[in-house]
Image 1: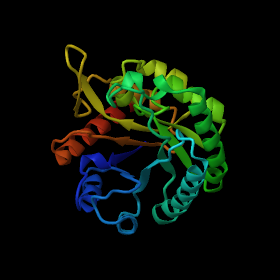
Image 2: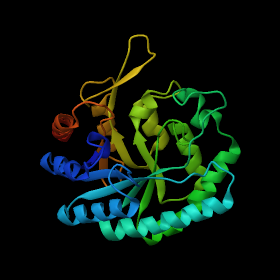
Image 3: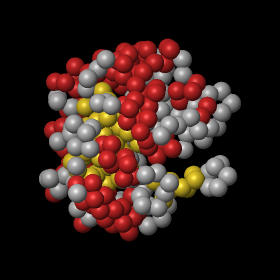
Image 4: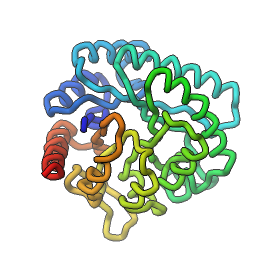
Length: 284
């Protein structure tokens, strides 16, 4: 299993070069980046920088996060956005050898809700129209992905239609697009009051997980707040997640995340050491 370092370990102005260095020094197999980061330069300069880094780290897997908003009723805008996405696929494949895109279909926030009211947003406030828009869009993208032997993985992320495994399974059933699967992130499911346990996630998403994010969080005693931690410190059983992923992941790629404001350099070392320990333990 290949482990990538998410950009949130070391994100900010002029930090791309160091991010790649941290990933290499800790034995990571690559990085996950954003479609565009204004921290670095303009859009073309950003892409040029990544292409240059890929040449220098030729063995690295590089995955990009990419948003395409299917939640709005704007057919012409969506058509243009899909064309731009397909162009990006060609660039990412040619310049970076990218196989997977971490994909998002647009925010859904319930009227009067705060962004952090996760249990009210995303699939909780979605209508059948939202599901149909996303399903139709995924079906349109599927042949383009197949031509390029690429996949998209919808991140189980709060405030999106595909936030929880029940909603993910429903959307994929409707789309019937084999190049579209799920980026399973139990950290996001964990902080949603409507979330389900790890075993239930794998039951619902069986055969549909194309990628995974690993991060950890700790609940406060009153269950009101969640604090991001190192992988081995939180309340999510990462070993159970890793065990479940053993029979998923057609491309064999996961990413570790550190959505904290602390020292991402030492966090990368600690978290990769923990991943290696778990892999050795599960192989016994």
